[in-house]
Length: 394
Ligand SMILES: Cc1cc2nc3c(=O)[nH]c(=O)nc-3n(C[C@H](O)[C@H](O)[C@H](O)COP(=O)(O)OP(=O)(O)OC[C@H]3O[C@@H](n4cnc5c(N)ncnc54)[C@H](O)[C@@H]3O)c2cc1C
Image 1: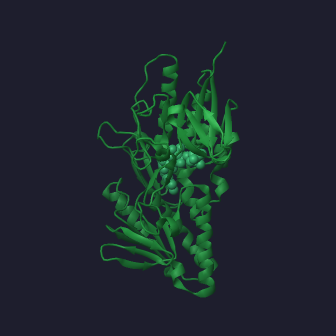
Image 2: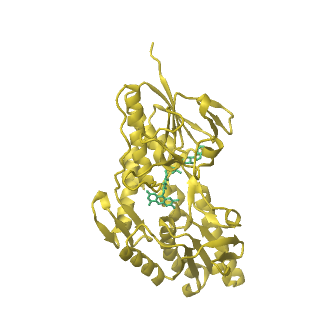
Image 3: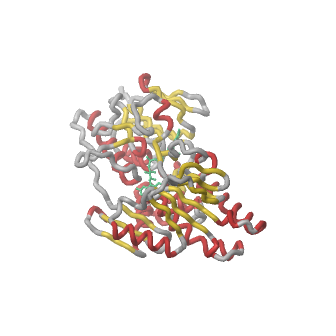
């Protein structure tokens, strides 16, 4: 009698979908079940374009049914908790309890506001399609309020943070401001766009950082660096050692992410909802669990530091995790995870950007080719998941 192995994949982001794809083509006798909150997947790396109103949400979404093999049984529901000692997962809406032999935990990221007063309540966050769409609706509402009242606080916007997401969002916003100025009847010089954070794009070298800062400043961004935002309210932010008040009706919070709250709730050993995994991508507590993507913390053996979580590393982790499940089931030796960077790319809107280590070569690039490269990366990722049609639709 053939005994099938029950494999449960949680989350249909970069890590979860890649795991499903590799599991489906593994030729192992597996019952594969995928659980995801929504019926669609989205390109999380392009959410800032939706939040800024530069892209329609449907341009970065794919139906899960279209991108998974018919060997994958899909359940749309929310994971409530993982009962790690009973090899089961409880779903929030159906209250169903799913049993598994092997688990791929790919529940992804959530915004992290580090307990900053008012940030959860008043700041706009970018972590999924729903909040990215709601962000743009708020921006439009504030521009309409300016149009009706002439209150210039509604033309003041703050971006909190200084990493890739902050810079990419600023790049999209500066491209939108001239259009908004025409539509809502203001002089574009009256729009105050301020970025407050400890530093800007610290992962890039000084020259590329300076290019990004100069480009954004030239397009109207004011930087307040070396400072932290202490609180957010519906009228603005308080920042810095001297508690400066900056009036702004629109505040984007792009200063950090953590892993899914389900991690802490399920009792994993964690830091900011990320689990430090073994080098074969298994959980430190349960050998039948693979933890991949933004819920995993993976150490770079050469520096002793954890890699920053990215879409790129999430996909590579999924590949290794599936290879290691296959090794386990066929009694072969697992392989340790090693990261091969395909480059760090920061687009600053649709016409310029900065990038380094492209395709793993020591190549640095600045200028118009960068957004094109980022777009090609999306297309490649869509192509790998669901073929040419999906890639061309992107
Ligand atoms: C604006 C922005 C720009 C970025 N740009 C880049 C970039 O240029 N390059 C790069 O490499 N990385 C970038 N990143 C980071 C990258 O998006 C993440 O590292 C990546 O999405 C992680 O993939 P993942 O599969 O682990 O998780 P996610 O993409 O977060 O996917 C998790 C999935 O699980 C689902 N889910 C979550 N909780 C539950 C639950 N309880 N029950 C059921 N389903 C659930 C979610 O709906 C989602 O479908 C960016 C991130 C942001 C926010």
